[in-house]
Length: 127
View: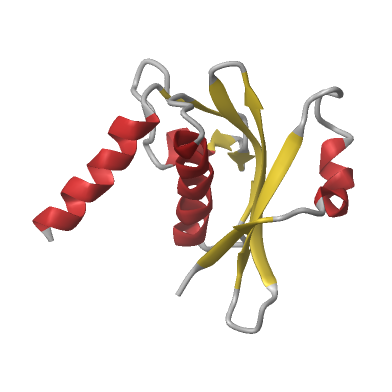
């Protein structure tokens, strides 16, 4: 079972934060393996009407990446934020574009997180 939690100690990601814009309140979620070891994470910030994901690490496990990204989007949705923007990339490809979260016109953005997450519910109903 995949476990992803908010981390209270974002200082362990200072090497990533120093490459981001100063003055923002960054947060992070971490995924954990069976042994309690961190297996992946994402760094993000809430900005105006959206959540912006700046960095995501997940090894080679694309399902883990998908779970981490969806967790950040879900957390934003719980705060009443309905737009997600991704700046995180893998091999030069935006992660929202890689997983086809956005639209062809704006592949790096989820314009309605609630609609996006409702799509997950429909997939489960059809399986």
